[in-house]
Image (cartoon, rainbow over all chains, first blue to last red; front, side, top):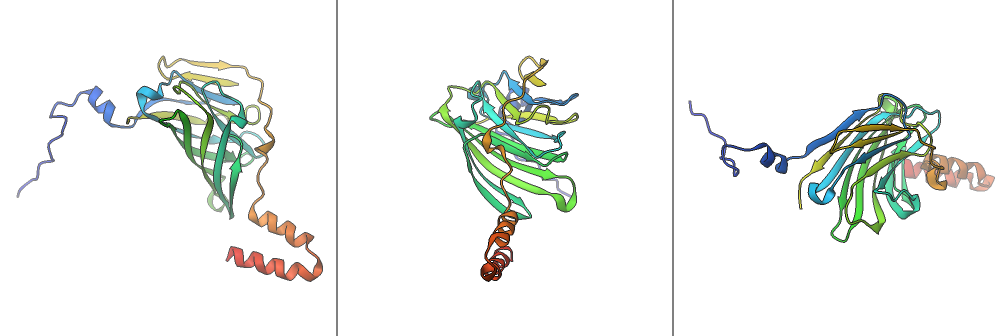
Length: 184
Length: 60
């Protein structure tokens, strides 16, 4: 019996952690809310060095009303400084464009999950593409996907803030994680 | 509450925060089903059948 050897790595047989870190998507921070929160700010970022970012957030809307989460870049927390184009499926399908950085939709007291990829384009505008599931279980599932773009340019991305449109919307146990995606 | 998580230092701060005012566009957009339910409700009696027919064609 002959066993085939894997192809030699272009990095050689002794791959260092730093070389590996350059070549894979890697977790740079994560957490779980131990109390309901209105916003989560991820600071200390450097998109020019890191490449791009992926954020995962999954949890529960703690409020008895349908709510949204917004994604803000650096200190620009004015909703109208962003646009979002989205498609939503919730039994029927609809969509639209809004003058805000809206990402997550969450039904009242129900679950939500979202993946967001964040990029700084060569001209310095920020693009973020997301997909968002919402609902409780089974046939209650809904789906939203879209792209956010900043109206202003940013020299770097050092802070990304996810903010709810009502106080303490993100319930206890809501989890988040941010990964850096090497490239460029 | 606002959670500030510094990805470099790994420090997490919890800060009391006044909630942001809800932007006007934060209302839940109506679904197509809700839009057509309103159209059927508001249509004149003579047009109701056509509105229902169009809706059925859309969701097929």
